Image 1: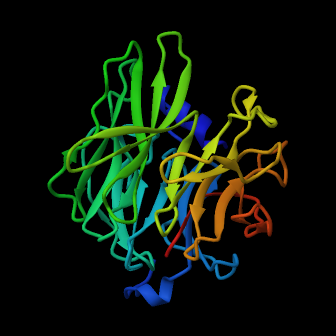
Image 2 (image 1 turned 180 degrees about the vertical axis):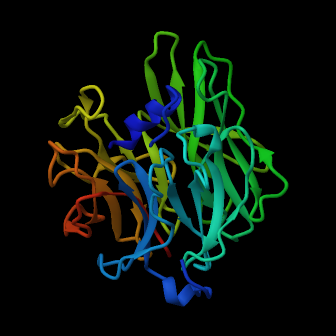
Length: 330
């Protein structure tokens, strides 16, 4: 499912939706963590950069559960841990039970970092591994939903709200934060819902120290910085190339790359399928992403890799489940 459109769903109150011993940075370098959606229940998996050696890290769905499971994996910079979102021990569908967790890279020693009656989602580590940014959505399930970016220590302590919404005639949801490699800025997606229900996604950056915001790219979402900080990859429906009818028919997304200041935007993928969830490879020359191009009719989401020049397309997963949200450890 196109995440830019799914972001709109979030704003409309429907979010995008183990063994002993610890790993090391060297052991997990270049590995990809990702979400497997098996009949609506999320599991965190890990695989090699060529798609091999798949390992499940979080438990499968218990019998009769209606919970959403685990999603949104994010590698710590040293490769020892993965932050993620989970419904924990819950067995009912309730977005207010979704919290931020962290586990070792082998799936062991999972622990919860947040605990509130709000939706905590899309974690991202700071480059020094000391802090985690995430989206905090309050009033979920009502017409007054509000989403902001919050930063906390890696142990869940000392939460600080870093985004605040300008006065607008509609509702605003900030989510999908990602730190610049030098730690000076956080890029995020801001979804604004007009009173008529129209949603628009825009990429902003914010200095977490000063709170200074800057509009970076309009009609775009899901930003990810290149390893050297010189570029940013994102998803957009701006070219309306193809159509998705997953919920209601609308334009399909494509992957784009721009300079870090938002200039020189160029399109990377060209398909009528939904291309979304981009993640940079450690070498800065390839980008992993999710697409249903193998079977648009059934929306079979798989993970692909493409070269920065638009060539060398490679399919990494082939399954009867959805493979989503890749995060490539650098």
